[in-house]
Image 1: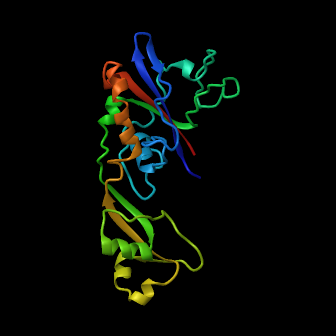
Image 2: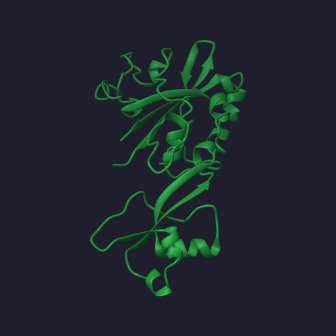
Length: 218
């Protein structure tokens, strides 16, 4: 099952933290911070970390802040749901923040995170794609998977592939288990979205005056 991130943005005002409608764009908008990116999830909250790669998480297990804008969850004044769904049926404007790994961070903290981190990645690459990658180069293959199986599937190491003849490399259902290093987050949607919050920060006393609430589903 896949995992998705759920986001809410708040700004600091004279009356405390207040929800900012429209700060999180919908699907299809570039950049879209809600894109399913397990590297970003791992960096932000230690979610889906360790599956083929490991990233040091920056803001894990913080939970939601006590001074959260409750009207963003329930305008009628109902309690903020501890696990994300308790008042969903009672409030039309319920803010769905998923059901686990709740956390938050200021814009200053998020911008200061190591988005240029180098990740050592491991995956299974179809032989044709692996051959193309060897020929054309690049810091990572165009496509790969974390696991592969089946009656006719054959998996070889990069060293074994290098020793194979051209005919054997063309065998169906052949995959290469490879490892590579790259920077998957340096220009990801979430990082580019943070830059779009600059005008809001300017109106809120700086980057510490904007914060992002995060939760995940799976």
